[in-house]
Image 1 (cartoon, helix red, strand yellow):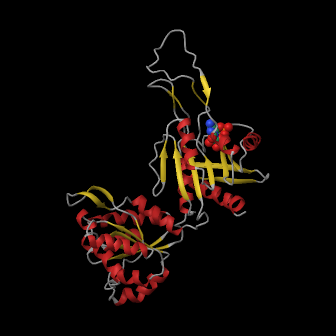
Image 2: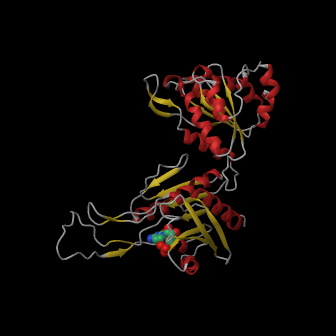
Image 3: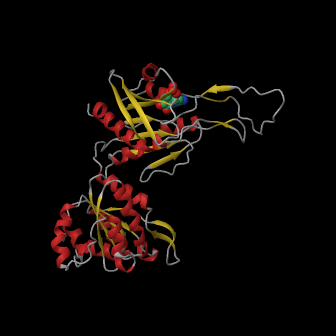
Length: 400
Ligand code: C5P
């Protein structure tokens, strides 16, 4: 069950061309189990109809502060009180100005004033408006009052201008909702997560790599951020986009990953090595493409540095967690690796199964702790597994 499940979210939609994207936001929030109440401003209704938002949200769309029926059925105070989160997307310069100034002259601005729930604002407007002194100052003041913003993207806007002002991607806005609503069990912790494969060149066109997709490591990084951690993700080449709101370091080889993890982890509270780091690389990288020949080809390999083992030698107060991809004797192999690398825990999965592990969206793992305890996390999405891993690490390792 995701963090949005069962949450009451009030979505304010104001008058900008991006109002049509509110439909997608409603759908995403509902898909994850949230109950969404839309407040549509009068100018928002110039861009999108209440019927559309009502159909998607499956709740009456509230527009008018002075409507006796909607006020008796779902009044502004009741909306303000029931909300776990108030999200305004798209937010115009006008609504931002009203909130900053304490104006409550319509349903949305009144509910913002009346709520004690967190408020997330995703602005969208013409570049000159967004960069105007008034809007900049209003956003700064609202930030200092605890309002959260999802910055607009840069690009070509509907008005033809190129610059910042385009509503942030729906996925980024929904991720902010998850971040705001998740429990903060990792608040104040700095964590480094590695993900993906590494790629070791043989010549300018060939390389050695493995089947890691990066999905498990990316999920661990995203979930740690939602739980309140300061997260750095170090990843080998993957097809995945950088997760929102965190520092992502992209590397290619085991050596580059080693340097990046060493650089990012001295002050970390936890390092979780989920990456499938190459154990060997070509002893010599050929400067030109190696020609094919009749007699076959023997490739000389040299071992790479074991990053976790290095960290384990100089562990300090850091919590170190490894991943073990095994095809047999899982418990025995995983525990042996944990001991050899001086880890606090190792997360083992069976990569001989086709329904979980490499490339799959799902996983099933066992976590072995250095004190001998074993926790099983049954089949779930990789994001669900990531939640289980952090809860287990929190309970066992951070609470001490
Ligand atoms: O020994 P094995 O490679 O199976 O151990 C897996 C664990 O060690 C993973 O957490 C992986 O990220 C880490 N590892 C590493 N550096 C290597 C190889 C593996 O940190 N060169």
